[in-house]
View 1 (tube, rainbow, N blue to C red):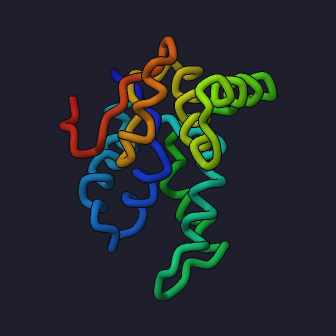
View 2: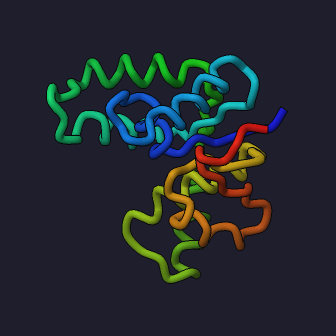
Length: 150
């Protein structure tokens, strides 16, 4: 069985029925929940997911308690990958070496978590944002939910 680390972009699309990529993302989430593929989520992605769900301009607005329930329901079968201080320092060092700044750190943390978990793939709608990390040794392949299941 192949293992996939789901990025925030995929989880948001899978959770929100009105999202333009909902159908594709939800198919992957359903496959993961059924245990047909390994389902990994970085611990920081949970926080990022909460931030996106509660901060987006939607009507009706998603409350913190609703977001909590949506996250729990949709990630209950996931293996949560935690990063420690050494991991965070390594990611910051990598970004410094690559002269990358700002929000790219969140993608870098997800890529590092995928590598740490020995995931086969990073599943994201933001493929280009992750491509810069493919040069890192042992970085999993980056694929989009538009890619067919194996």
